[in-house]
Length: 305
Image (cartoon, rainbow, N blue to C red; front, side):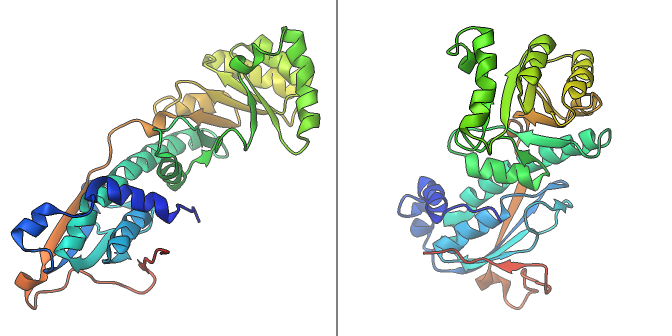
């Protein structure tokens, strides 16, 4: 379960709809019955389907999830089907399509990165940062989870991670090292994580009692040597690699022995192409219906409010 509140969905709708659709009104087609289906134009990991369905439901249509987020979908396979009037379908069309395309892009890139890293180190984690586009946090994180990632940090209040930008306020290097056990005493249930840009500095953090060391832009050789030395000092230490990590180099970083890879790369790239097809019942007659559902393969979406 990943909770996205109704007001967020309503905000997305309002950004595009803004009271009414003057095109469907001017054509006099608003009340005509129709159907809408969505499917990817190439194989991908689909995401954002639940939110797209909720968009249509909020507008008054009936949405059926054929394939939920997180599944790899073949080209042309219908993942969402909607029944409603032309006014309802057009009111939700572009917003729902955008949600699925951007979310599926993130999920597909994430899945590629996870696959490449785990081919070398099966237990490694890909952890996504909070460096997503402002306002898109919920959809971005859910899409990354759909692709197989974990979440590095939800925000400032869920974990302790001291950057160099924090340490400049701590005085000398020795002053900061003395703060590491103090931080642990202040929040005894939290792990103390510290970012470093050099192996020597990282080892000093390990000796001071840090639970997690995040290695920023180490070379592969530096990282492998640091992992070996740091684990000798503290076998339970968790080590992450960060900075410039993507699908093309994830396997090399995984081979260094780190416990997880921290990345924001998955947020930035081309959206997947999700095709939307509409049909009008008035002209369909008794043709085979678009919506064909099998037990256990779909969900009826209902939103609160």
